[in-house]
Structures are given as structure tokens and as C-alpha cells.
Image (cartoon, rainbow over all chains, first blue to last red; front, side):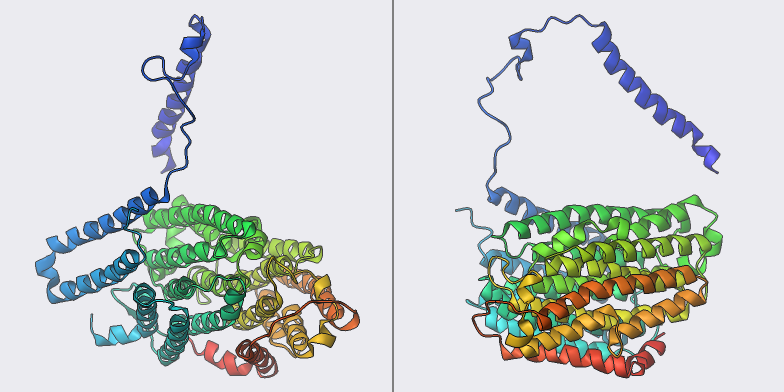
Length: 118
Length: 472
């Protein structure tokens, strides 16, 4: 059974080796005349002013996190909506419980002021 | 679905509702700590009641997603009691550390829910869900004293390593699904002899084992334990060492311990080696610790080793032994961490061995309780810790793992050194521990009850053994 995977293995080995070879080959064979402008981060465009690694306000993370949570909620609703007729009353009650639990979290987030930007 | 199924998972539903109530109380009521403390206490008592009431049920519910009654209910009882003790002991501690927020109780409740899901899972996905719910709450709880550097370190370390270990677990589940075509645990267990022809089955099982071994803190995956236990709030360390460990062991038992179909030689050997390594490393490094929290962390690694010996044995006695061990270990470890939390003062004062010198003269009652917990952890009869070790090691001998049992007994002798060192310091040395402030009667009462339960289980172990043996 493992024999079936030999082509995949060869493909992986060949892919990695080829990639590495091409990277090294351009380094070995290409001409090199570095100067200050070529070495700078952006050759064209804006002058870099300071480090790109800045501390972001925690608000961005909060919004991103909350977005993902409620986004996933909607994702769960799609399969339920598609199968609504088969699931019937059971599915409806189940969905109400699911949304109620999420709403409890939403009330918490809201009252704690996580949705306020200032 | 029908009403009987809902009743069958009553403990899980009950704790979910309690958690949601506490969540809403925190959102809608100002200064809600006192109120939510009482809601949590009452809610956990109710949950424990439901867990005991569902003990006699058998079978599965919700399309073979959760098992009902028996094993899961016993663990649900244990988790609710552990959470209850932790919450009661935490109240004073949190006030002392100026961190008495409702979120603490909330996170303890949610992680207890995760533990219950893990212990009553009939499907690998439910185990994963429970494990994540439990772990994410514990990551936050580890860093709950957020102004402390050590707490931040503990939280980050636990989170990064824990997320990594969860990755292993999930890959294991994926490969087991690939090999068997299902995530149903009982199907995989029943067909393990045919499935074992596939290499994916073995890789999946191995990855699953890594994930759980990380959560119980067994040896090649134990590096996080001392740092996390040291940095976390003391009562939370106790909760992690008992509740989280018991939940991981419950999942371990669900997948790896089936007395009717003996484990294969390979699984047995791997578990025995992990067990031996945990006993050796945990006990020997614990000797050289000067901080009691770190000592208890290493000792919890060693205890995971003892319990893994029962798992490696893989027979009925091993299963009984692990369950009995977990019950007793919960009480003695929460007790030991509880006393630490009572005596601890701000900026990590009163946490070293030397601080405890002379405690026996100043606080005779507290020192006596601590001595009981230490004797029980060391496994000295008549305390319950002895019988836990006894059953686990006998199980190992019955399964032809005599070397493991001998090693376990030798390592228990090593452990006596550091447990008794604390007792000797408390009673035979003068010291100048500063204990200003009062120690609340409630905490003392809870610790006394824990100590009494340990003595009761040690003198009369059959009281709980009957329940364990009648589980299905």
C-alpha cells in the first residue's frame, strides 16, 4: 500500500531540491554589484521611516476576534437553513439554544464595553 | 432526541446553565463578585447532585456522541467537587491578591464543563471539544494575576505549548479517522485488531497519546508543568493538577484502557516507559526544589507516572486503581495547594520550605492538616494515598510489569524524603513565618473536610471502590 505513495515522495523530493537549486544557482552565477540604493528596503516608492513592528491598539484584536466568533455563528446557520425542512421543530429549538448561548456572550461583550471604540 | 436523553446529560446541562447565569450576572450587575460566588457554589452542588443521580444510567445519547451515566457521571461528580473546593478556597486568596473578579468563577465553571465533556465522550470530536474548552479557560486562569511577571510567563508558556499539543491530538484524530472511517471511540476500540494493519492507525494512536501525555504532564512532555504551576494563582495550580489531570486521564482511559480487549504489546511498552520516566524524573527533581509550589508540580509529574502504570497494565484492576487514585489525589492535592494559598502573602512570600519552619507551633491545626496531606501524597497508610498506589502497582504486577511496580515503589520511597522534609520543618524547627491577617473559617472547614475524606478513604477504601467497580 505504501508503494502507491512513492511517486508522491519523488515529487516532494524533486520539488524541494529543484527550488533550492534554482535559488542557489542565481546566487552563484548572477553578477553582483550592490550599492546603497539597491540595498534599501524599497527601491521605489516611499522612504522607510521606522520599524514596521509596532504595537497595535488592543481594540483591533477585539474587533477581529468578535468578528470571527459571529462570522462562524453564521457559518453554522447555513447547513441548518439548507436542511431546515428535514430537521423541523427539533432543529429550530436546537438553533434557538445555540443562538441564546451566543447571545449571552454578546450581552457580556456589549456590557463590558468591548464594542466601544473610545 | 427525547426527554430521557436530556436527563441523561443533566450534569452537563446544569453546569452550562450555571455558567451562563454567572456570565449574565457579571454583565448586568455591578460589583457582582459576591453574588456570582454564591451562584457558582450552589450551581456546583446542584451539578454534583445531578451527576450522582445519573450514575446508574447506561448507554449513549445524541447519536452516540456522549456516553451516559457510569464512568462519565463519576468523573462529573469528581470535577464538580474539585471546582467547588477550588472556588471556596479561592475567594480569600483572590481578595488577598486584589484580583477578585467574577471572571475567575466563570472560567472555573466553563473549564469544569469542558472536563465533563471529555470524561463522558463517546466520540473523538467530543473529546477534542471538551479538551479545548477546558484548556482555553485554564490558559486564561494561569495568567489571572496579570500584574505578576511569573503569571504572564505561565500563561504564555501554557498557551503556546498547549496549543501545540492540541495540534498533535487533532492530527491523531484525523489519522485515526483516515484509518477507520469513523470518529466513534467504541467502534475504533472494537475493531482495533483489524485496523492495526494500517500504519495510519499507529501514527494516529501515537499522536493521540502525545496530546494526552502533555495534558497529564507525563515525562517527555512535562517541561511546562513547574513553570505554569508556579506562576498560576495557587488555587488554580491545585485545580490544574487535579481537575485537568483527571480529565486527561479520563480520556486516556476511554481510549487506551479496555480490560476485555488487552492492549497490544507496543502500546503497553510505550505507556510503561512513559510511566517509568515520569516517576524517576518527577521524584528526583522534586528533591532539589526550595519552592513548595514547584515541589508539588514535580510531585504531580510523579503522580501522573504512578497512574500511568495502571494504564500500562490495562486490566480491570488498573482501571479501578486509576479511578481510585484520581479521587484521592484530587482531595489531597487541592488540600495541599489550599493550605499554600492560605499562608501565601503578596509578592510570593511564604512559599519556600524554610518559611514553613515552626508552623507546627504557631498554627498547630493548619500544620496538622498539611501533615495529613503530605503523608497521604507520600503514600503512607492509613491515608488514602497508600491504597491508590497499592492498587495501581498490583495491577502492574498482574500484567507482567513487575519491573514497573518495583520502580514505582522505589520512587515512592524517594518521594517520602521531600514530603517528610516539610513535615519535619514544621514540627522540629524554630521559624519566624509572618502570618498576619485572619484565615477564614470557611477555608479551614473545607480543608478539614478534605482531610477527613482522605482518612475515611484510607481506612475504608471499599466505600468508593464499590461505586467504581459497579460502573459500566
